[in-house]
Amino acid sequence: MHRLLGSTSLRIALAYAGIFVLSSLILGAVLWWGTVRYLDSEIDAVILADTQAIGDQLRFLGLPGAARTISDRVEDTADEHAIYLLADPLLHPLAGNMAAWPIEVDRRPGWYQAELVRQGKRYATRLLNVALPGEFHLLVGRDVQNRVELRALILEGLGWAALAAAALAVAGGLLVRRAVLARVAQLNTTTTAIVQGQLSRRLPTRASADEFDQLARTINEMLAQIELLVDGVRNASNAIAHDLRTPLGELRARLESLARGRPNSDSTGAEIEGAIADVDRLIGIFNALLRLAAIDSGARRAGFREVDLAALVREVAEVYGPLAEERGVVLAAEPGEGLVVTGDPSMLAQAIGNLVDNAVKYAPARGRVELAARKLADGRLAVSVADNGPGIAEAERAKVVERFYRGDASRGTPGVGLGLAEVAAVARLHGGALELADNGPGLAASLILPAKD
Image 1 (cartoon, rainbow, N blue to C red):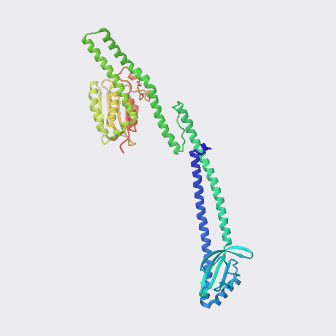
Image 2: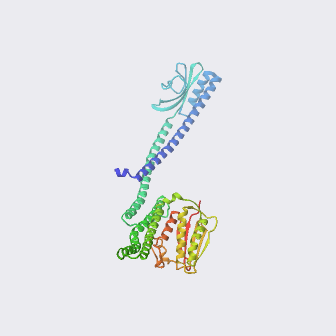
Image 3: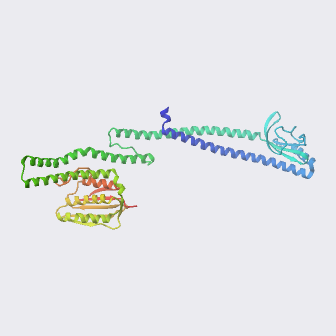
């Protein structure tokens, strides 16, 4: 029972039922008040009209004329609900259809509600006491028993309507609870499977695009990112061990050779330079991993500002121009104009530089690398780097952005397989994406970024 009462869906259902019943009661109360007010106003209007007519006779014909008018009304009227009584200063009846002055009505003029006995039955009556000259009193009223019974019927109907509304509200609330629990059960089943290690599972969605679907899509995006990070962590140890084994082995061999052979100073200097190169390679790997960790954490968002993408492209082209010239590759840059994004300029420069470095590295002799920035049709901005090298097979394009992955075309070339992974991480941090396509021949890599709002 405690578990049932602690259910959020049940509380929502009960709240829905309470609101539904309350709104029904308010509507019924307004209808009841309006009906009773209308009936009361109609009765009061009839009483006031009779009082006015008798008062006119009193002014023109005096007390005898008023008494005769009352007698005529009692004898001639077909309205059995009308009540008339003309009384002297001692409240003794002079004319009318009442045998005595009602004890519920005192001498003060005004409206009264009383229960009178007529023909052996008690009737609710609405009365108006009017003071006349000479301390005479005129009592005009209407039998309102029918109105009282009608009011009771209305109240009874409202009561039954409230009970029906409560039953419908509870039933509707339980249906809502059942629907909510069904969706929650689906979420629980999937999340339980994910907790048990099935990271490829995703929350089910429907075509309704309701709040649950929006939540499921957001969670699915989060799960995809978590799966990517977990896979990266899972493969990192093997990849790091594989890529660090060679430089560490070479470093150990050099140091062991120095310890055993005691070579001359020239050989010692060469071995030390080789050891330094191996250490630099190790430091480069760890620096790349640290950059990726900082990017994935999102901590660098604090340094976001407006960045002129065209100026950034020109700077990268100037930095990598000598490298391309040294390798006999033509680097052509088309920076565009008026292209502004919000981001970290150093990370964006590093990402674009990685793309250009890869393109120059794999471009053939007398090859060509094209660096361009442009605005796409959908309003986003793109920095593309295209070369005419060996390219990347379509089956490998989804893998080359993984950490430490190196395709067949990169065998025998320097590098550890973190460049494109870093570019993809920078793109995600900036709300964009890295797209790889065939350049026929070669590779066209595009860094897609949202334009500044």
